[in-house]
Amino acid sequence: MTIYVLKHMDILQRMPFLAQDAVFKRLSEIAEVSSMTKEERRQYDESLKHFRDTIAVMHGQYLEGMEKGMEQGMEKGLAKGRAEGMAKGRAEANVDNAKRMKADGMAPELIAKYTGLTVGEIAVL
Image (cartoon, rainbow, N blue to C red; front, side, top):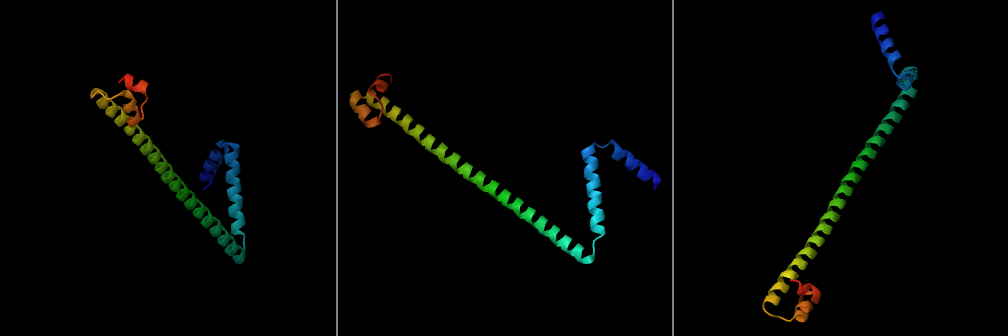
């Protein structure tokens, strides 16, 4: 038993001060709890259970909030990507249509009217 205590005292002495302080605070808490009456212990246990339940609920709410936030972020990203993709697709379709119209000899002003491109953009196609 003496060797066991000496070994652990050596470990304790090598620990940083804050760690030592935490160990002694925990030992103090254990001593306080062990000296309680049955009623005090019941109240303490009830209070501790309530505290732990509250922490568990808060953690659950945090995780749920994170999940909802991720879902909303994904939805916004997909909607933005979808809108950008559709706009890019429309622009590419307008350019393709303008090339075909130009190849068929259509007037640049008419091509601009139907595609939304400028006469200058049509000239470089």
